[in-house]
Image 1 (cartoon, rainbow, N blue to C red):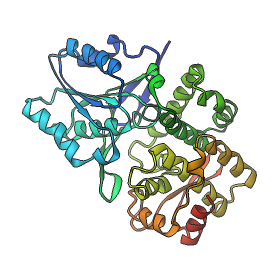
Image 2 (cartoon, rainbow, N blue to C red):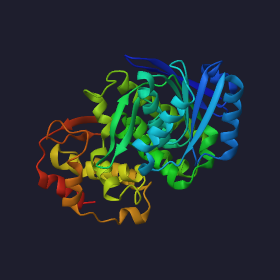
Image 3 (tube, one colour):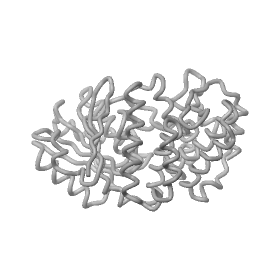
Length: 358
């Protein structure tokens, strides 16, 4: 069964096709008789790569593919230039369409290549990880990293379509699955109390890969993100709520040199810190804080929970975060589940204490 979800933004409306066998040729109509350029994440299983390549090769008037090693260090100018060079050398016109088959790194980078090639061309996302299905594929954020910060160079550019194949989840390692669960839990914490309690009840089933649970979890998570993006496409207001845990999390990724922590692990740890900060700044009740922290800890390995951070060093790394307003760091905090707000000018000692309490 496949579900078609509608994403509506000021700049573009598009569909997200979610379900088993979403990789059906009928969902690739945008490639008909067009110049198609496919960017592939090298971690995607070869049989699934072959299926997408075969469909696009048959439908397109011209077809080129490029494979990229999907690491945060490769989410760079050099990789972006590799895509642009290939497009230009192959004389692709403004009517071309880019496809991304992979996780968040490849989705973000392909989207940014599409946003910047000839001032903007169409692109379709085929997210191959749970994290990219519920995060990178929805909302039109595209970017590459800079040596001094994650996703510092980018643009808002909405895709033409998203194809989320449920069967791709079967190939994921447990660590990758937990990365996606971190974002799903985040959406529930900031936006939907009922969904949070559903996750609390079903987290063990999700961790054991119950496909029927994932169909609902992915669909609900996408709907929640759409409810925000449709009202604030370019992050002037409530879309900042989606950064819950990310000011801490992005600093944690830099702290670990993009190698020690996956994005999902960093965000999960960042959410634990944000829960601590919420208790200190807006009076999040201790029983609710414990309930939220307990769910987050379910998706973190013991090794992650025993990590110790140099609080001052982590705070220093936050200073280059792109979510600042001028020289002031923005933090997303919660007064309760589904009750989210943005706070500024927080005392640095409260931030340091929130890190050390992990």
